[in-house]
Structure formats: structure tokens, C-alpha cells
Image (cartoon, rainbow, N blue to C red; front, side, top):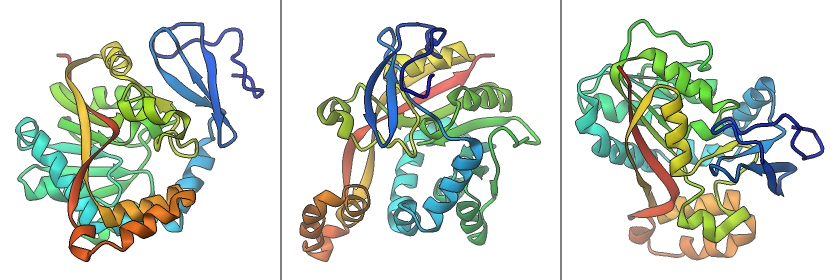
Length: 289
């Protein structure tokens, strides 16, 4: 892509190869491009790997992800909910959780009898997991080399953060045993939330999310990298109203009044989990034999 926001003459969609890519909108100094043939979207310009590392060091150190990292109860709720959905498919392991953050899913899975380890880009988040006694290593996808094939790999809210989403699929295919399970959660640009909120959708976050898929697009990309899609479904998260208030304060400062109203609710209501449809999907696929 040219720096001016126009696609270069030889630009092609990385999913379907279409060449009619067009700018959709600008946000946060970035241009969001879309492929009308398949629905894949991405933004330009992308950060460098060094810039990305520095950004995640900041987000987990003093930036917006500190809200998530500190919300131990909510992280546990989400992890246990994901485990309940996937437990019949995971077997006894071994399982790798990519983008493990502070290790909530690794802890839930190991507590449920699944031999699980994790890798995490942020050294700060990985260190927090290690402090809790969890096998989570700070590593880039490109640099990590497992000792044995995995029975299952999970990557929750990861693929949209990567500079190149195909790296995740290439590495997962190489690390999984034939027939092994790959489970992803990611934003769905075809969701009702995305269509309703448009450029103001929560997941159009140009400092953190670089690639966007709808159901048919992620299915096509998985198939092109040796995976057989078994299920694509709407994903929801059990979040407390207190946590939602903190997220509103961080990501939508203009809605501070709404956050304060939530804070005035009784503690029993602020701490009650509710299942929120934020516009995400769960994708379950298997590596072809």
C-alpha cells in the first residue's frame, strides 16, 4: 500500500487474491481497506515488529490492558466459559494457548484435566502467569519451537492483532498433529454490532487490531492453509457491569457518564456476570491429515 492511503497497482487481497481493494474509512491515522469480493478488511500502515513490541509493553505496563490484566475474576469467568465450550474437543492434551496473556485459560484448562501451556507476546503478561506457577513463555510466534506436536491449539482474540495473520495458521498447522484442533475467537465484521456501529465499533481499534474477517473469509483462509472448518458460531463473553464500566472509561471517555451510572448500581448488580454479544465469532477447525 502507498503511504497516502491508496492501494498500490499490484495490491491484492491476501485471502481471495481480488484486486479491487478499496479504502473504507480512516480512524486513528490509519486507513481501513476492504476487499469487496470476499469481505476481508485490514488497515495500513502497519507498525513494525519493534513498534508492536513497544506498544504491548506499554499496554500491559500502564496502558488500557491493565484493566483486563487486573480483572482476575472476569478473566477467570471468560476462561472457564471458553473451556466449557471446548472441553469435549480438547481431550487430555497436550494443548497450546497462543496469546495466553496472564494465563487464565491455561489455568482453567489445567484445572480441567487438559495438559496445557501457553505463549504470550508481552513479557509482562507472561511474567505474571509464571508468578502464578503457570507454564506460559514470552515468545513470538515466529520464534517459538515446541518439542512435540499438539493435540489442540487455541488462540483467543489473537489473529486480528498479528502483523501477518497467515503466520498463525502456518505455525499452527506445523505444530498440530494430523486431525488436531484449532480454536479461534475473533471479531466478525459481518456481525450485527459491526454493521450497527460501523467505524465506531469497539473492535475497530487501529492501534491493536489490524485484520478483520467475516465468517466466509476466515473459513476461506483456513481452508487455504490446510484446515477443515467444523464450526463457526457467534461468541459471547460473560462480563460484569463493573468491568464494563472500566472498559467504557478507558476506550470511550466521551461515555464517562454511562460508566458513572453503572458504578452507582448496587455491588450485587455490578458484580453479576452478563453475557454480552460484542460482535465476535468462535471458529473450530481441524488440521487436514
